[in-house]
Image (tube, rainbow, N blue to C red; front, side, top):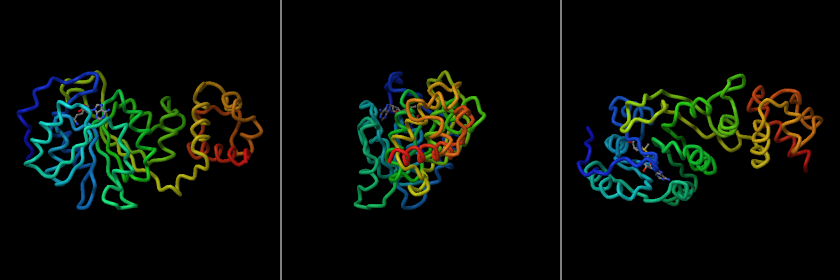
Length: 273
Ligand code: SAM
């Protein structure tokens, strides 16, 4: 069993999104979902007081953690000593090059596995930062606001289907795993939480020809979600170009499948060549 260090005396810092997990059952469920195997290179974002860190180290003797709060670095390292080998990176996670981290051992095709109870104020930037390094990441297990997980996993017809889901699902398999109530954390957040698994698709399975254009199509399509595609995308293309991609110009973004967005962006990219 892992133990908590008595040296964590700092109060939780709101501006760093600190809500420390204390529910043993939830922590076990996260470790079980990650299911570390020999040789895996685990990287935890925001270890905090080590709620997930120590149980992971009990199962898997090597772990890299990325923590921004300098007050947590020393006690974390001290407390981890008894459990295994902990590499601590004291940095803003958004400044960490996951691709370089994955290749640390000189392994060109090396991949890391990301885990984290994320600071909710940074969840979208962290997700998009991870997507930029998707080829270096085997999978991700993140605790996020439940409302964000719902948006990530939503499909056409859902009220919460939108830009986040269409962007993420093009690059990753998104699987919501379980919900977590506010009482599982100290201090409790104001919202419900959920754990989600993201598995990046292989580069040749993504099939997006022009990533910037795909992002622009999705952004504009959902920019005014009540508008038809013909109107919402008027800055990028005309109705004929949408039709040429096999997509109905009179449909609204919320009715369009992710695969159709990919086809539309690829068709526009070819029409521009
Ligand atoms: N993993 C711990 C747990 O489950 O109890 C703490 C989770 S807490 C929700 C988020 C953690 O992310 C905090 O430890 C916080 O200091 C850290 N954090 C916040 N912003 C960060 C950043 N930009 N880069 C790295 N870590 C950050």
